[in-house]
Length: 257
Image (cartoon, rainbow, N blue to C red; front, side):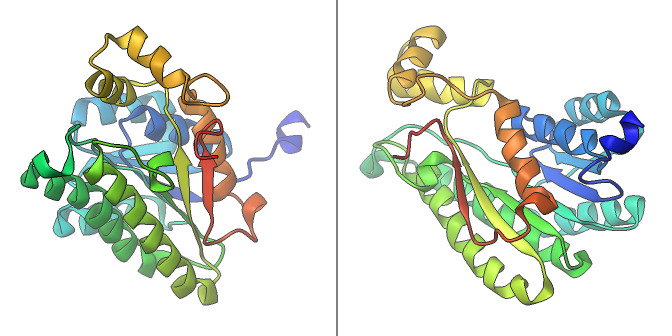
């Protein structure tokens, strides 16, 4: 009876998550699997993907793919569909931070690479997933609080994260007639290695001091746990958000106020 009472919100559905080896990707995978989904983790680090998928049991598969490479993305999506027989949820979550530098000094090759991973990567994942999606499917693209705001020194990252909103809004309009929803999620600082590296570079302080400096910018005065972002991902992936498309969901502790 208990099992019936908690029948998963994503029972029978299949998802693909890029950036699958990262803390948000893995937390999202755990959240989706806990609600009955099967999940394909896509990323660059085979050992981490294998370990992550193994921790999720039979519900998970994994594959290595560079999201900037159309051949690899197309193969990863097709492989997930072949494994699961369907595709219902796309979480485009791969990202890199770039460097901290003013526009006048920002390395051009780093700017290009940051945009390639975030923007081209999300474009390719969506492009090759769309033919498989049925009515009721959901696409969630990971932007950032700096996809709504910005700060000095992060021109590539903020530009990429803003660009994802344009991609999302276009996709939301194109896919609405098919009953497919597309939204962006905008995490604030998350307690993970990706964020701590950014904070140390931005402040020149050690890890703990840098984190406490960033806490002062957040109205809730703390970093998010990856699981808190994952719960918002689950909401957007599930039918609980069935009338939400084209939205920018801030999960940032009030940082974008």
